[in-house]
Each structure stands twice: as structure tokens, then as C-alpha cells.
Length: 150
Image 1 (cartoon, one colour):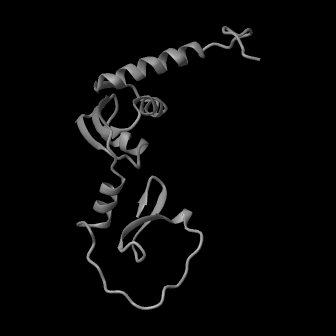
Image 2 (cartoon, helix red, strand yellow; image 1 turned 60 degrees about the vertical axis):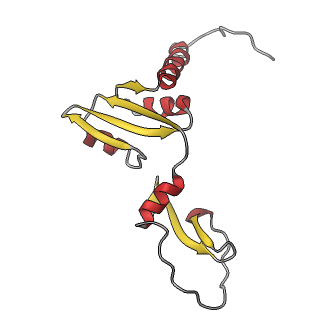
């Protein structure tokens, strides 16, 4: 399965006697294991369903409304891990889980699409903090505005 541009393999680890997810670009060595093994049923309805639950991590629920169509946002976020809902022809809602509101704010801003935070307050705060940092960097400075530790 491909997720976020990476290839993943779902397989049984015979040493652990359990299902494991392997990112194929990280597989270095392989060894042939003697014998045969009984076929096992998938641990979920599909490989995609298992990997989605395997990758799911606890986090903060966020909800944003973007000033663009759901199709355009889907094109900008081909590997999204959330729910995208069209609101009308020019706006959509995106709901997902994030581990870092500040990181999510920064990566969302890079899309270049106006958005509003519906929840949580921590994400709105992170957006304001990021705007303040970027606002200060918005002009070329000939002198430093803060002291150096050199």
C-alpha cells in the first residue's frame, strides 16, 4: 500500500507471531525462512483499514474550513489523513487528528489557501504565534533586532 508517498508492506513477523507494518525503503536485509506457514486472515477488513488504524495516533482533533473547493484541497493534500467535507462550491471542512498544533499550523499555511479554525483554541493560538513570527521576518533587515550570543 502507498501512504504519503511511501510503500508499506503488511506481513506476519514469525519471530513475534504477530502482524507488522514494514516501510519498504527501510528494509535492508532479507533472509529466506525455511518451511511453510499457514495462511492467516487479515487482522482487519482490508489492508488499508488495518494500516489506517495502525498509523492512527492519539492527538488533538482539529477542524478547519478552507476557502476552496473540496476537490482542489484534495489535489493539494493527496495523502490526507482526515475527513474532507464539501460545504459548497468554494469551501470545505477538513477534520483530522494532530500531535502538534504548531506544526499543523505551519504545514497548513504552506498550502497557500485561506482557512479558518473551527476548533481547538490551541490551533488558533498556534496560528497567531506563527503569524507573529513570520510577520517579523517579512522585511529584509540590515541590522539585527535582537542580541546575538556570539
